[in-house]
Image: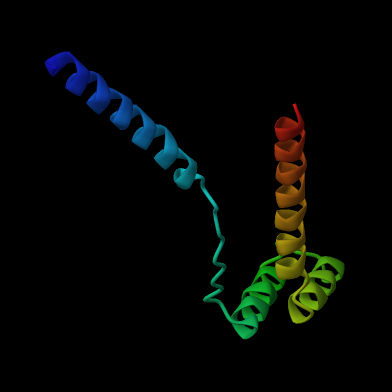
Length: 96
């Protein structure tokens, strides 16, 4: 009787551990907090121009991107593309 109880406990532990593992899947989320204002970015950009780190053409291009939030938009677009690739890989793995 003692062996049956031990066997029953071991099987129960095994079932609980394997069923709980399915709840541990990671679902990462990215929270983007930009603490730098556009004004500060533009001031930093102007300083870089004044110090000769940028040409006038580079300054104008980057200024336009800052004003239109193109850097942030392209950042999130790249993240979406990476997520899509990961989902495609997971789908392929699940199909096998």
